Image (tube, rainbow, N blue to C red; front, side, top):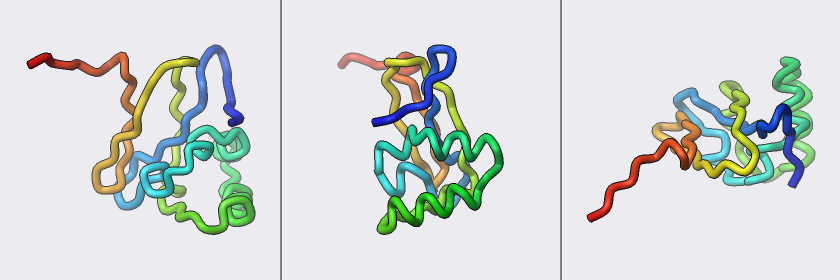
Length: 101
C-alpha cells in the first residue's frame, strides 16, 4: 500500500464535516493514504480526484470528498477513525486513556 511520507509523518485522509464520512463510509484502507488523492487535494484539484476515484473505485461511495483534509501521523503510529453523523476524527492510540476494572 502506497503512502505519502514527509518529515517522518504519513498523510492520512479524513473528512471532519457532518453528513458523510470518507473512510467510515467506504472502508477502503488504501484510500486513507492514497498519495495521488493527497497531492491533488493539496493542489485543490478536486476534478482530478473525482475522475481518479470514478475510474479506480467504481463501486464505492465518496460522500465525504467535499470536506476531505490531510492529517499527518507519525510513521508507525497506531490510530483509528471515529465517526459521528458522518464527521470523522482521527484518534491516535497514544492519546487514549484506558481504565482497568
